[in-house]
Amino acid sequence: MKILITGGAGFVGSSLAIALKTNYPSYEIFCLDNLKRKGSELNVSRLSQAGITYVHGDIRNKEDFDSLPAVDAVIEASAEPSVLAGLDGTPDYLINTNLFGTVNCLNYALKHKADFIFLSTSRVYPIKTIETLNFVEQETRFSLTDDQPVKGVSSKGIAEDFPLDGARSLYGTTKLASELLIQEYNEFYGLRTVINRCGVITGPWQMGKVDQGVMVLWIAKHYWEQQLGYFGYGGTGKQTRDMLHVADLYRLIDWQLHNLDKVNGEVLNAGGGVESSTSLQELTKICQEVTGKTIPIKQVPETRTADIRMYITDNTKVTRLTGWKPEIGVRQIVEEITEWLDQNNKALEPILK
Image (cartoon, rainbow, N blue to C red):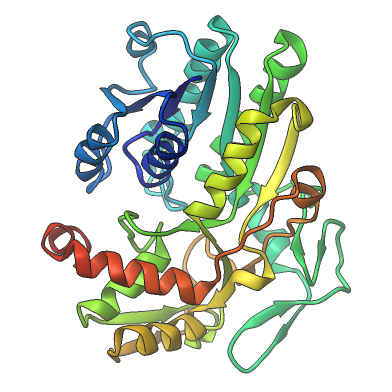
């Protein structure tokens, strides 16, 4: 099999590429990336050492696809992934990458009749609707209840039929627009596709920032003993997310690559679920236990732009169709990332500290 992974030097793309090459040494894997995100340059040598072909290019440029060979499958993992992207009034890079870039990827896949696996986001679900959901405030977190004002949500989390009306961030909108185009290519061009709406993806080799990659950021701040803050919702750190280890995501993508006919045309939520969820307050406690360090955390009551109180993925549909469900819990994620920081301290300190 020949596979193109866009965003292939990013955290998710490089992780998927290396795992695929490890498990299928005979596969030819090409990773296309423009290296815009700080830290992605570290992955180029990792890809090369794994026997993967790195191609410096940008999905915004149709010409950059011309030099690529025909492949059997495209994994579209490229994105400007920040939920705050474009909110400063300059959305051009965001839209050109996350929407027009996806169109270029689709046309390349169509040209070679390649299967198309798209990594979308839970951020396609509207902010105001999520913020009006019924919840209970527990001692250390916010939790969803079963009694809800809209369909597609329960104590298990948010499902694929959650209402899509309303604003969701420019980032979420570009991903949803891409989803709609992918469904058109599937229906009218016969392109085999699957869309994965991922929750918070994390794991070693993620270059975490405030607006994207919060798990790594939280652990790194403990590791190097720097300050953090609980922002919004009273400053209590009870806002909650589910965490999907990139190795769990790989197992799903691996299955889809080899069984795409069974999920062709589907939209699937894929996240850590309730079992692998944590509030910031709970994450702090785990970080303290794993790193042995306690750091100052300021409390800022005001809620930040585009933030949400909680998001949990309901994996019912993806599990029913594929048998997949996440296996790696929050504590193991923290332990693995801490070990990665230990092993790569010098290279990572200028990026993450």
